[in-house]
Amino acid sequence: MKPLLLSFPDDRDLAREIANCIGAETGRLVWHRFPDGESLVSIDEAVKGRDVILVASLRHPDRIALPLRFVVMTAREFGVRSLGLVAPYLAYMRQDRRFHPGEAVSAPLFARFLEEGVDWLVTADPHLHRNPDLSRLFEISTRTVATAPLIADWIKQNVTRPVLIGPDSESKQWVASIAARIDAPYQILEKTRRGDRDVSISIPDFSQAEKGTPVIVDDIVSSGRTMIETAGHLRELGLPPAICVIIHPVFAGNAYEELLDAGVASLVSTNSIAHRSNAISIAGPLASAIGELSNFQIRKHGDKN
Image (cartoon, rainbow, N blue to C red; front, side):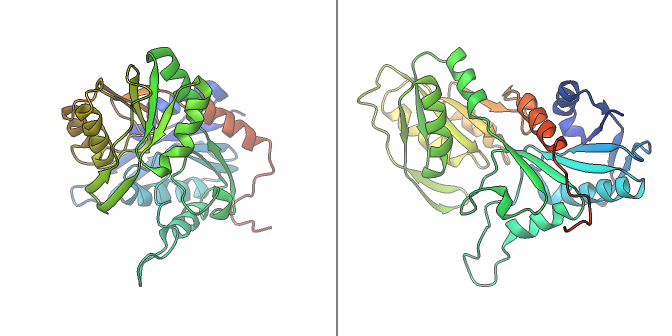
């Protein structure tokens, strides 16, 4: 029997792409929010004995976590055979240690929350810091999709003489990989963060690539301050407007509009989070990762062996 794929409303386009790649059926998932903020979810009852895949990008984790839990537990009640989660954007990975007294270490806590309901997890380029991979956080089977090959292909096809810029040290792993694939120069800048919306970026050196097209690459853009600061430095140096390529387009508040106002040439993102800037689909690699997991003996819910 074909697997059944369920998705939250914002993820339906990506879910349909994945379903086409793996030959899955798409089922019904309805999420109603009452005026007081409570949620009511309803799903396809024809899940009994079936392998179910839930697609839910966690851009708003506090809003979606409880409805996600309701979906998972309802599917369990209806007798699913196995239940996997595809979370292209995986939230709550940054707080992996206690930085100040009394803080919750949310990364392992959120991992426990998710794996209490699902048998396996697929995500794309999680924002990990001190944890080298997801196996340090999750006991269930996990797969991580790398977006660098897809981004490299897009840049190669759409940008003339790209010069890649990573706005901080955390971006180096993606920027260096993309640059190597397309044989392009790159720079990694230094970032000083004083608050959620207060950052400063070192000034890039373009003496060796003055005729190139600056391409700023970052994994997550939330407030947008890092990219705005970087784009401002490039503009002051008299360089062409930058092209911004983003793996996870969180775009909190008016970040997207503020970035456009900062004078960037264009904003391009993967569809790990549904947004009008989406231009790079990760459905294929996500589908491949799901296929890899289907060949494993996946730990079923409640089995700790």
